[in-house]
Structures are given as C-alpha cells and as structure tokens.
Length: 242
Ligand code: NAD
Image (cartoon, rainbow, N blue to C red; front, top):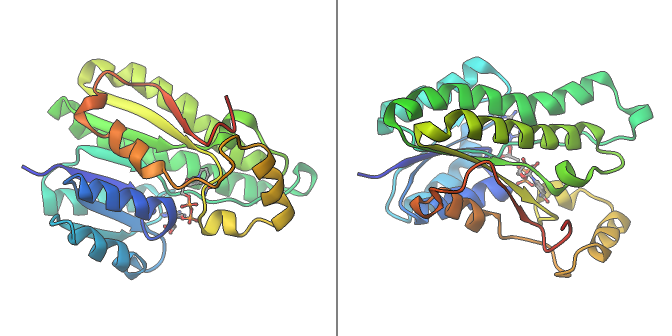
C-alpha cells in the first residue's frame, strides 16, 4: 500500500521540489498553501505524472483549525499519514532596531508554531501506527545567525531545538524527527535578495554555486534506510557552515 506524505508550502520553490521527489519515491502527496489551493495545481499535476495521487488544501499553517483541515483531508482521501515535512516558511527581514513586534511574531508563527501545530496532530496517529517520519526544514541561518534576520534565524534555530526534543520523545514509538538546514537555494525567497547580498553569500560557499538539492536529503530521511537517524540536522549548504 502507498504511503502518504504531507508537505506544507508545496505550491513553489523547495516545497514543490520535495513534493515531486516524494511522489517519484511512490508517496501520495498532500500539500497546502495560503490563499487559493489552485496555486498548487502545477505541483499536484506534476506529482500525478509519477502515478501517485495528490491533492492541495488551502490552509494557513500558523492556524490550528487550518492545520486540522489538512490532516482531515489527507486521512479522508488516503487513510493515514506516514511522512510530515514542515517546509512552509516566510521572511520579514529588517535590522533589529527597525523590526516590529508584529514582524517578529508573524515569522515565529508561520515558521515555528506551525511545526508545533502539525506535529501535535501528526504524532497522535503515528504513535498508534508505531511509524512516522517528520522532517523540519530549518536553515543555515538558524545555525549561524544573520544580520537583518533576527526573527527568521530565531524561528529556524527554534525548529532545531524542537526537532531534537521530539526525537527524544518519540524515538521509542517508531517516529524519527530530523531537520534539514538548506544553505542558499535558488527560489523566489532568495531571488528577492539584493545582488550585493547574493555576491557576499557566494564568497562564503565552498561549492561556489547556489543549491537545489534539498528534496534528495528529505527523500533519504523519509525512507526506511534512515530508520536509525533521528534528532539530526542535515546541512545541505555547499559547505557554508561546517
Ligand atoms: P518560497 O517563498 O518560495 O515558498 C514558500 C511556500 O510556503 C509557498 O508555497 C507558500 O505558499 C507557503 N507558505 C508561506 N506561508 C504559509 C502559511 N502561513 N501557510 C501555508 N503555506 C505557507 O520559499 P522557499 O525558498 O521554497 O523555502 C521553503 C522553506 O525552505 C522555508 O521554510 C524556508 O525558510 C526554507 N529555506 C529556504 C532557503 C532558500 O535559500 N530558499 C534557505 C534555507 C531555508
């Protein structure tokens, strides 16, 4: 029987790549995005090309009712959820003195509280099934910090502590919980950065190129081969942080 993966924020960027890769691996895919679910149509159609089923739900991952809606839809269509990838994320960059409380809290809500909400729902059924794979998409910035991203780096560092705590709570229940920490990956999120900022990043990356390899790392951590790996942070950053 096919397994099912929920990947949050799959309408574009890294989330879309993860959906496609897990579909190629044979998982049915449930994704979500804010606003109109049709924004994820391209992802859903591309997943189905791999012979699996896929669906999108319009949901804000920082809202508990919306999160429940994603899981209800997934369970109604596919029966169970074996893999959860917390990928949806936002930035609201500013230097500390200019950062508003609202921008700080909004980023924490979407990037960190969301994982609390999804994992709270996911782990109940995963515990019963004695099987689960949870993968949280953190960031190199959560490991290194970054000027102008106090909110974002706090959220991504928080995800790492959250990941390790859940790994300890659920290890004996057959659930692994890991984080992937992407470096500088080419998506709409990084397209928005000024050229001088991008050039400066490049000087810090030993592999001397932008990354595009997050989905492969997620695929491995979602696989049965990764059964003895939990509580880890897998950096996929071209050596930016070592
Ligand atoms: P992106 O902005 O291209 O896509 C983000 C996705 O999340 C979209 O599908 C969007 O609809 C969804 N989303 C945003 N807010 C949401 C909400 N409240 N509820 C539901 N869905 C929501 O971003 P990306 O560059 O693909 O990044 C994906 C993840 O990888 C993020 O967590 C990001 O922090 C992380 N990351 C990205 C990079 C990079 O270089 N792009 C580096 C490190 C970490």
